[in-house]
Image (cartoon, rainbow, N blue to C red; front, side):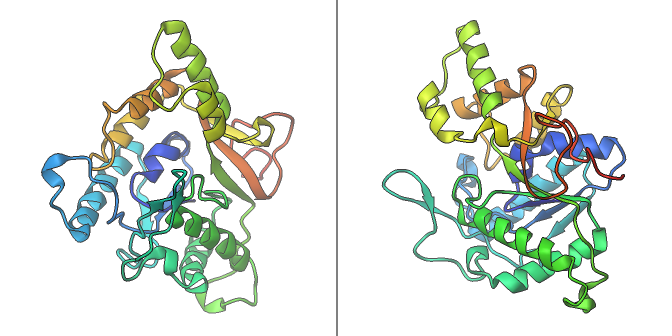
Length: 291
């Protein structure tokens, strides 16, 4: 089970993983917390869209992306439109922070227990062995990503407590909780390969900037699902989110290139549950589990 904040997050952060396990016959559930109504609109002819119109467009984009990836079990947390995209602002140092004014129903302002109960019911119904979401900072500070982290961690704990809300289903203990992580080694490999080929790095992606952005100790990466054989599929899923992704943007071009470099992949840190066996990153999220 993957818990993502907005449409497009699943296609930028975990499409290779979802696709692989769909192909292997696992039940893959995607939970999306908001419709993404306050995303940045990159298509000029859609700039007049209201948040509600953009949300409807992003629902369609997500459906196209999931068809490409192969995921058929998709759920909106609390029901479609229950939680509104909170948007974000940036501080003087360019870091993501909450907006001063939030829309009605903003996910960032949601009651944590109420939102978690929605996920508790899903966990108990789907009974996933592995669940993945963002780290405590939402990977980059977006308030909805942080809230998705909080909801997932709380719901995962509550779902396994027999005396908690039996009306939400039989208790289920998730075997392994993972945090989707930037992969510092993947970006380093991509930068080295780009240098060999004489490709310029996008503005703001020099080696020092990349070290700051991907300040994850490689020793903390517990598993990596490689892109080999799935890079084109991942790119197609990402480009299905046309309102949010400009494939000609230098950053997205670099992202596309990174996925083609041998040995790169989607990285995960172990947050709770059964440790991975062996030394170094595992190549299977279910390694060491009874499946």
